[in-house]
Each structure stands twice: as C-alpha cells, then as structure tokens.
Image (cartoon, rainbow, N blue to C red; front, top):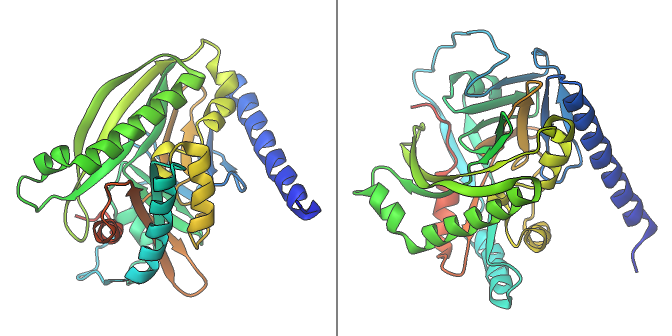
Length: 336
C-alpha cells in the first residue's frame, strides 16, 4: 500500500518540476537570459542571473561569467583516489546484468562514488582545468564536462551524446574504439534513444555526424571519447516553450540508458548513492538560443572530503572488470 508520505513527496516533486518549466517558459517568451542547473531527479533546480559570480562560476565554449584569473599550478598535483571495492561494484553489476537478461533494460549507465585526496580545492580545479563546460557551485561541487546535452541555435536543436572511452596511449586507440563491438553497440543504442527523444520536441530529426572522436587531456593521461550529433527543427515560437523542451528530454539518455523510464527505476534501486546534481544538466539561455551540458566529470564536497562520481554504460556484452576500470579511468582533472 502506498503511504500518504510517499504520495506527498511525489506531489511536491511534480509541483517543483511544473513550476520550473513554467518559469523557464515565461522567461523564454519574454526573451530574458538565465542560467540554470537541474539535478538528475529534477528535485532541486537552480536559477541564476547570467552575471552572478557570488555563488556560481561557469564557462561554456562561447560564454562565461568569469574574468581572466591567473592561478599557479602546484609543482606537483596530489591525486590519490579510493574507488569502491571491486566486490561492491561487482554486486551492482550483477544486478544490472540480471535485469538485462530479463529484458528490463538493454543499456544502463552504472555510476559509483570515488573518494579523492588532493591538494587542489574545488575553486582551483575549476580555474586550472580545461574543458568545454566548467561549473563551480560554491561549497558544493565543481564539474568539468566534455559532453554537450542540447544546443538550440536559430530554431535548430542538436544533441551530442558521448559514449565510448579508451586510453589514448593504447596502440591504434582510435581504431580500436571504433571497432569495439560493445562500445559501438552501446553508442548506437544511445544515438537511437536521443533521436527518439528529439522527435518528441522537433521535426525532421536526423543523425548529422556519427561516431566522431575527441581527445581529452587529463592529469592522468589523455583519453579518446566517441560522440555523435543528432539535429532537428523546432517550431518558430520555441523560446516560449524552452522549459517544456528541456523537461521532455530529461534525464539525458547517455547517463541513464534504454528504455529510459524503466532504466532510471533500476538505477535508483541499484546505485547505493544519491546522484544529486551529478548527471544533471547545466545550461544558459541567452534570450534566443540555448547551450547546455551533461554534468559528468564531477567532484562533490562532502562533510570532510571530496567525492568524484563516475560511471559507464553496461550492456550484455560488458565485462565487469573492464567496466570497473573505466569507472576509475574517468576519475581525473582535465589539466594536461
């Protein structure tokens, strides 16, 4: 029997989401710029003035609210990580595989927290790192994301799902990634999911570029990551529906899996941590156009330590140890 408390919580969450969407739609209709952060569960959305620097610092490929600031790189970066024990990961991985074999999901992004010891503060990580998107929320987290969520420019909506990672030092790394059956199958699954998602809000949806490779510089060595671009056309009055558009596409397909609704349910029952703002989205609306990212590569301030949250896609082709190692491989700061 469903408790009254549970129903009250669901009602409150729905009201928060409804009010957020309405606020974004209204500001879009009025052509008012704003910056926003939406957490994975859409329970704690945040809005900011684009020029506010007291609580939030951010940078996108085109815009930023920070002034040029020189910070010296330490002579040696301390970066000791303490990931979850393999046995703990293996237990969660087995649960996911059981759901896959039952047909409940065929791709699930399984994430875990890693405790980090470093001589870098969240602010120093923000200023020193080199990433397409950087976000620093005072006393809470820093994120240096390489993954675009959606971009809207002159009525064209584009999404750029990122799936597939390999150590750039491996011989013929790019070809190995492009020829990896598991990684390619996972990537195609997400491309298909995002194409279907965009079809909810746009017309003439198509894959513009499939499986291109980006190189990412990090303090632990370079990585190659595989992405694709999917585009569609929005109606002429899309700014007045900017909140509805964003809401209908959440959570981002690349960080949950497929089918989306059931996979999110499995994630909540399998992961032993609260994702919070990790794998949520950050974005800026300039009054006409929108740019946003998926909040991956994310370090969170806990009571007395820092926690890096990371993960990867699990399919029936996945090897548990390989997935565990990929989770650890993604625990880095993009300081090359």
